[in-house]
Length: 275
Length: 358
Image (tube, rainbow over all chains, first blue to last red; front, side, top):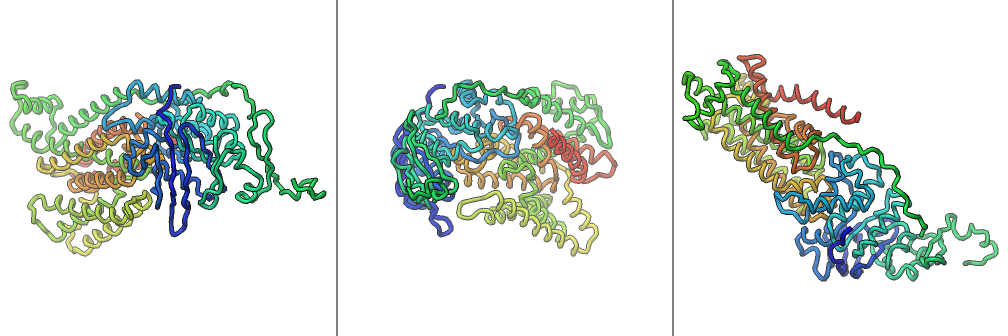
């Protein structure tokens, strides 16, 4: 498919979100360089979604700034931000009879004025987006009746139809089977866009991101390339799980294998040889 | 990585083509439906007129040279001064209720929303009942609609400020505020009626509450007509943002919409139009709930397509319903609200069950 808009540099500067007297996000600073993919990981309630909401303009940070190429997204008109930054969220259109095409066409909204219809170019962009996610043949199907995985792919297609250089994805692989998880993330990589992706699956995060940002209790506890960030010590500290990290001999990608019953349940634990 | 080769996508199930109808023919058909309903509405009455004559009179009024008057002048009076304003108002009210219903359903992101849900109609009722019970006539013949509209405005303000805190208007709070305000105002109206101690006043208040277009004059048509036209045009202008509301609050924000400000503005717009309608017609239920459903089945939920269609369908439906209201037990009239509920309720349930079965 044709290229998206120019990848931007995305930064958060000392972003805090306080709700009900509790800091959900505290003093978070990160940056994503143009074309870079940053994975945002952390346990449930770490503040990943809250942080992302401040980026795609659903939640104004209590303090701090979110900068898109040095422009504060909260000082720009929403439409202008939406032409440069798209979001893939968990939220799905509800009980209205929208078709897959209708849902994807929403991605063209930031480019349109009142009474301006979709032209041939818009229709091409919409169908291209659907095709690249393998759902073009569902264009006329009611969105409601899709499987969870198909819905997720359509929402990614909607973000593609926005033709932005930057994307925010909140758990884009939820509901997807293995092949479609890989497809979705490969698609994002292939676009060459600046992307920040919240992921639960650390192995996917390690495979598809340039850097990983680990969030715990609203604070950044580590940022860096997957191989340096994902260490047994960090996993122990943040997730409270015992895990080994090895490097895949063919790809060099870090691989995390969690010990379901803890380190002590391993056979060699008897010999007292911690690994 | 897993080393998957490019697998062919699993055989796609035959696309569930929804058999949606082509748009332009549907729109033309709906327009013809409006014309047919209006013709019937003007033709029927205590003095029945042949449809050809109805059109003769109307065309003669527009372009006198086009048709030679072959009818007694009294018939022209009947058409122009009695039946045409009533049919027009019926069309305006039907279109307005339907369009507002559709916008409101997007606003609260719930297909079960009805314009009467906003509490605005209850406010109008209190205003109208006050005039009837106290016998106020500060504005002459306009006292009732003016008071009803004032009541609607008061309800609008109440609901608006109850629903909005800190610049945010959530749908749950909007619905709760609307329903609660509506209940309180209905209670006040009922209290006023019950304690008035005058059966005639009680009856006229009850009739007003059930809705009706009896005694419509040209004076009463213009303001709601203007409100509905402006309201519909404004909604068409924001039909894309309306679509975004269906996608959900977060998604709409990420697509560039200031959701809370848009919702607040939309609420005020819809409430004003409903207020202008209710002030002249009483509260007519079910139209605003039902018409959007029918239209979404016909042309889909995209507001750019659905809004014009729902305006036409609503107009045709209400003109026909008003015709039925005054002809079923002629010369008596059934309050139109009773008819729309009697016809609308079962239709609605049938639609709902049919959809569930699909």
